Length: 45
Image (cartoon, rainbow, N blue to C red; front, side, top):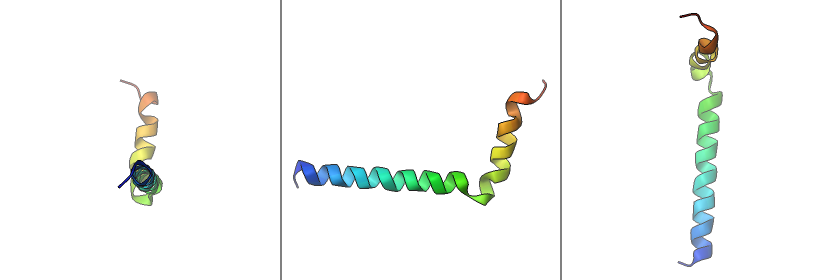
């Protein structure tokens, strides 16, 4: 296994991780939690 193959594997792993985070962030199940988190800075103590 040479350095080019390792770079390809690292790039693909990073891309798959990015896609996983993107799907998690855009999922409808998380929308309510993200909406609540977005209002936190504006809530009174």
